[in-house]
Amino acid sequence: MGWMSRRCAWVAVVSAVWLAGCGGGAQTTDAQTKSLQTVAVTPKVADAERVAVFRFYNTGAGVHFYTSSVDEREQVYRTATYMEPEGEAFFAASVPSAGVSPVYRFFNSQTGVHFYTISEEEKNTVQASLPQYRYEGIAYYASLTPAAGFTPLYRFYLKGKGVHFYTASAEESQSVQANLGATHQYEGIGYYVMTAACGSPPCGVVGPNRPRVFIPLTGNNDLATNAAFDAQWSYVRQNAHGIWGNNAGITDPESASLIRKLNTRKLITEYPVPSPGSAWLPLEAFTNIQRLYPDILLNPEAIAFYTNQPSQWNGRTIAQAEAIYTDSSAPATQRYHDVYTGWQPQNFDAGSSLYLYANPAAILAFRSSEGTFVECPVNLCASGPFGDMFRRAIRETHVRGRPFIWFTSNTSMSSGWLTAFQETYNAIAAEGLWRSDDVVVIVNYGGRYPKVPESVGSAAADTAMGLAYWAIKQRVAATP
Image (cartoon, rainbow, N blue to C red; front, side):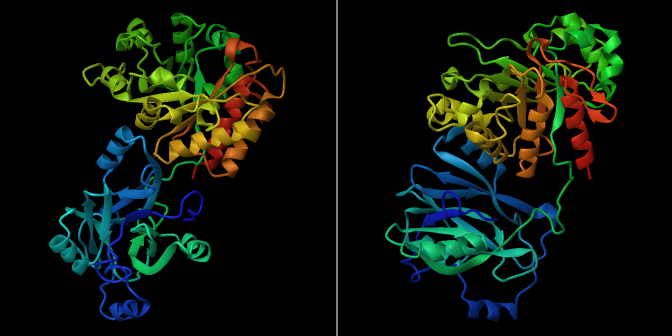
């Protein structure tokens, strides 16, 4: 866990230096650790009792905040634009068990910053002597001594600022000590936290580290209506993972025909964010296929609202959209499970006038959405400035635990689409950025690029379905 990139702490808290010397009562020295080991109980934390501790950076105060509460994390995502999510910091026990002790949390009403301690003595002193600290209870449970599956949480004191920070990264701790010693005083190990969500990683259901492949409606009119093409994309028809519901330039009968040829009913619908002053469309506006063709039983995963103009979100929220499009009273084949947002790479460029982080409403839309898609043509995002923006979008979607969708489209290229697509896809894979719930969508605007065949022999063809064929094969090869 090397986090020495932008800031140098998991968590910053108000200092309790005045309570028990330089480091307060939370840290343990090497001698104390050896003594504790002689009487320590080996921690035994069941997988179901482990919880991820999430980290945020408070850009206004210049400190970190962490929480093991998913509800609190989501509340911060959706309401605090100044809090930048930074992902899972470490894992801890959510309930008491053998070998672990409570870590207590206080809120300093004077500074608006939280304070955390595992020390019973320090906790009691704070409660008795410092009324500005409101006790908020037990944050989680950690170990006072080393144990298998646990790692030290190192504690530093920021001189002159009255703030602590912790890091579970030995690399970061060493770097801070070597490079920031003038301002960051090392205080030792605070306690020990877990490095994984389970006792025997990998944890949970292990899926392929390659994205799913969705087939768009738009641009595929010929595939919908011409049965002579069916055999030329049979593998894609049988193995695609979903349908991308952009129906520009394709009729309802053509859409129904194309869907019937696919072996999937998973659907993500794309639609522009309504223009200023316009109302959200009713759910019924997106259910034509289901109502006109009752035999088509769709599984709507999400509806994705797209704009490259962050100001389009002014006066709008994801909560408004969720109230309409995820309405539990609607039939399951018509209501959506989630609401996603869609952008372009320049929305993640701090130097662009379209930077979404310059608009509070856009920030909240991005953070509140349950997934993100970014449109980037096949030959634009492998590297260079657009590649950097593209990767930032991926990382900032994944740090929130959401799926990322690469909406790749054709430009003026008349050939070489497959090679360009593979270059970007493989570059993202080489950096370990793909996740199993991610998606790629190959959009052939106007059907200008050749659509079939999907393969020439066993090799993917340089066609729209050839790209889908190749991407599906990559996921199959990566499946454990």
